[in-house]
Image 1 (cartoon, rainbow, N blue to C red):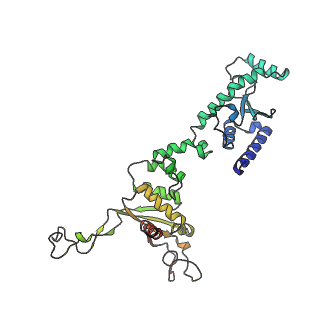
Image 2: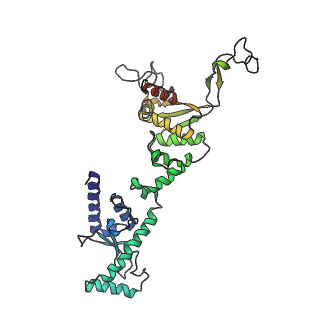
Image 3: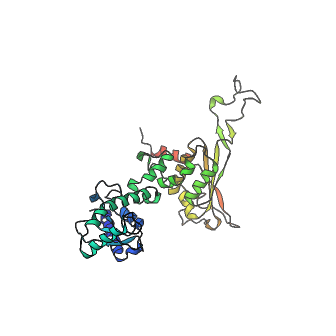
Amino acid sequence: MSDALREAHDKREALWQSLADQPFAHDLFALLRKVEALSPQAPRLGYARRPQQEPLRIGQEPSSAFAPSTIARLDRSRSDSPPKVRIFSFGLFGPNGPLPLALTEYARERASHNGDHTLVEFADLFHHRLILLFYRAWADAQATVNLDRPKDDAFTRYVASLVAYGQESLRDRDAVPDHARWNHAGHLVRQTRNAEGLSRILANFFGVPVTVEEFSGRWLELPPEQRTRLGALSGAQLGLDAVAGNAVWDRQHRFRLRVGPMSRQAYDTLLPPGADHRALLDWVRTYIGIEFAWDVQLVLRAEDVPDARLDRGSRLGWSTWMGARTQPRDRDDLVLDPERLAASRSRKTEPAL
């Protein structure tokens, strides 16, 4: 038995003991959910083809009284059978059951006075299966219940399919956790991507303020054949296609992310090669793609700006600054281009041919 299965077995035994001591303190569906989560080697409750594959049995306590709680008691009298949970609700017997009360009284009398459990056990054949199917219908509609056993979580697959990540081969592909991506499926499922959606995703994921500054200008370098040259027949008409220099100013294809003000700890993780730096790059690629250029401006809040000291392993201009500070202010002079940094690191790691 592996350590995980042994731990699950111990927790399941502790649950049985708690149920035996205080059955009234447990809800039926909550109990079934816990048992299902602590039985990873068994099929989900309601899906097993044979009762022997299930970690418990369900039976109804024949009683004419109105149920004081959903669970009556735990029966572990048979060592060759899984624990049997006897309930008051959901069954053929009792004042809320479909059978006449005379049959409830008969079944209770035979079991209590004569030790004859034949009728009760026969009815429990149907109780066990139908109650578990009723529980399964409820559990399959609950996203949190599906997450109790992530290996066969169907609800996650449904949400992932909405944003084109339904296949297992598409999971764990980058630094963004899959469930963080599913959490923002409402933004990712839309065909139109906007600045508000990107800022909300990043602010929620990193826990810091994020602002998208659209139409951030940049210089676009012109290919040599498109530059203006004296004596050329094309590209030399003033006011039409002549360009002075080797670049043009563009404000349509670039945006800037302003992240912060934030703490020193959050600031350091967003610096390369911090853990959140790669996640930021992957989030923007997921939401925007590679159609637009972008950069990020990191803002360190004033109270966390460190003094420049030689005995600290800080990076000048990145996490420390020269000069005396006359008054505290947020430092926002660091602007990074994550795409260019990623391309630079990729070239350095490529094997030599």
